[in-house]
Image (cartoon, rainbow, N blue to C red; front, side, top):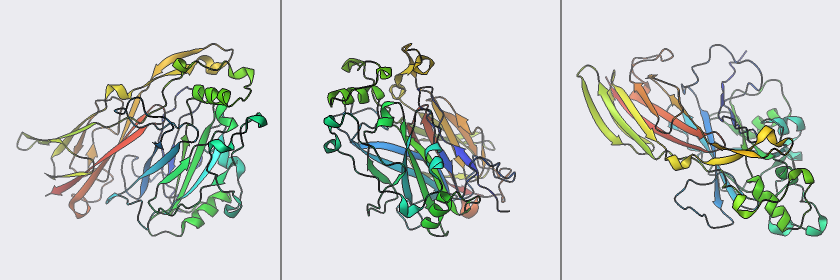
Amino acid sequence: MPRAPHPADLGPTASTGRARLACILSLGTCLGVACAPDLPPGQRVASPRILALRTEVIAPLFPEEDPDAGVRCEALPFEKVRVTPFMVEPTGVLDIAGPDFDPIWLACQLGPAQGLFACLRDALPVELDELPECPVPSFADIDPNAMELPEYPSPCRFPDDGSDDGRLEFTAPFAPNLLLGGDIELTMISRAPGSPATRACAEAMLSKAADLPNECIYAVTRVSVGPIEQLLAFAAMFGFELPPELGEVPDPEDIPDGDRNPRIASFRVTVIDPAADEETEYGEVERGGKITVKRGQTIEIDTDTPAADLQTFPVPINNGVGGMGSEQQTERLDGSWYRTWGTLLAGSSDDREAFNQWTMRKGEADADELPPDGRALLYYVLRDSRLGVDWWWLEVEVEP
């Protein structure tokens, strides 16, 4: 029986009435099946993996009030959104614009009480060629005389835009499920380097096959369209009658800011040589930067996220049951560290001033005293407690 891959849970949930979760299933999938016991540690990158999906609003409807803030990951209806996968290998960050990555993207409308992957799973089995094409929504679709919002096909398949850069760009819809607190469920399917065509990977998943190909990469995430207070204001502006259970249309000053991606503003490196009792400060290292160290030395990393990136947002009390109002919560941070070789002091961090140590010494799952080709990589993925994400990576040449 082939080894099942390890799924990485990529998004802590927040009690906002919408579950905030992203699930990455690399090189096959478990999907509720227990994974094999011989898997490498979750923080070790031993094969191609997707560590995160980042959503960015790239064509906002209105000028951003704070141009120095992080980019919004929560879109308003009719805004253009870009979704970027963070794909990595033991040899480095995978070129998602290269021939080894050829994703198919599907969209599905999640209801407010549905968990991640529930929408597409409920539609299976389905033929790939029978999926309708996801439309490009626009203000022209809105007909106030219809008294209801236009339906968005669910599930649907995004057409190939010919860009071949591995990312997805689409226009956020204005659909009925969003007014109730639902989200857009995005599923990404791709072949891994050297594996069969992506279409075979998609057909296996959509057929509800019991065994999915190990050489395939599947990723599922949510895209939030909102804030819901702004959606209610939009619906009222277009003349739609809102159900009483949705409450009153909020005043403009009561509409919260959209969810934004946190930022890794600083990544500082110090190399500690225990044999010589010396420290060498490299200072700030750029994203994807390279340094050279000796076997046995320890790399100390300090990262920083601006305090302003931790947004405060309203959360319905008791999930809104009984009209009990809302309370304010502040986002939390969750950092995940991954390496291709060596040992890490910790696999996670939860502070905006995160700290870790990476020692250039063979780990329990490593085969050799030096990394392959003398190169080791560290990947750091930072998430907030909603849908925001950022990442960094560092390449190290390890000398004997």
